[in-house]
Image 1 (cartoon, rainbow, N blue to C red):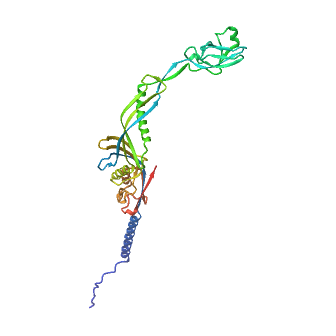
Image 2: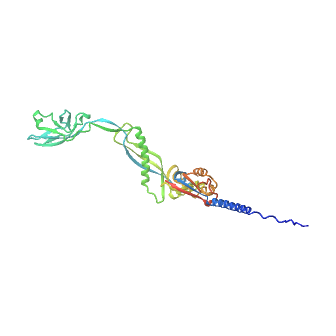
Image 3: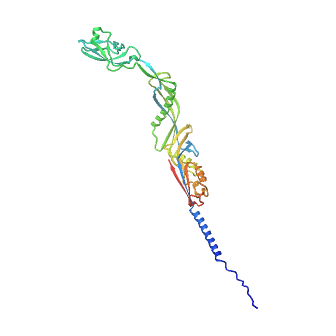
Length: 377
């Protein structure tokens, strides 16, 4: 009898099975490597164009008082005498007697005396008179002042010849006159003062008086002075409706004065600027040359004054602001980043670029996000 022994050993796996496992492992390795490369190569560049804007700083500052917005100083008053001349803006045409000069010729052998107001008749029949008496030497000539007999523009004549009607017809042939230049002044313009002229002149006078007062009293180095015009005692030398070339305003003005150190005021302004940087997005570039300071209130008894200060400050976006840190852009799309950046102050434009080009969102690594801030004029 033949006995058959059954084998208990498992059959060997086919080679194809191991090959499939190896290929799967290789595929997963490649995929994992691709994911790592994708993650490590993902980049974002955000370029921000910023603009410079002007911001007004307005402060109410106490001089001589106490408090956060107070500086030391001197408050006084002074009397100041001043006068200024003004010209009226209105005018009108006024008729007058044309005037000029004429040369009288004497072709005779004897002197000829002509009295004041002697008539001279032009070739066109316009009558003039001598302004003074004159003696014309024999075979000589004399220049005299003449004026038109009547007022009006018709007296404005050009160079011409004149006869002297008061002489005999024979003498008129040898004693005569000529003008070498035109006669003028038959009509001239005179200024007429209006009520508006007086009102405007008063405003200009007050401004000029303060300016002249400030020039008259030199300041110590590092000090500033502001003036408020107090009471006035003014005199106008002309009234509305007067026909004049000019008029004058004079009088005594009370000047209310406050003096302070420039550095003290600038320290307050700088404190105000620092206080306004709340969210840390702004960077202050520069102040205007000189703040505009107006004296608004004076208490002479207590030596106190109030000034209103206005300063223009140039500001822009701070490139080092926390709001521009890369973590604000993790995983965001181009549109989301653009909307966020354009929502900040002082931004003119923004350009967002991802790498590789088919990437749709920003990486989640800070060192893979570059934020570039450029300023434009």
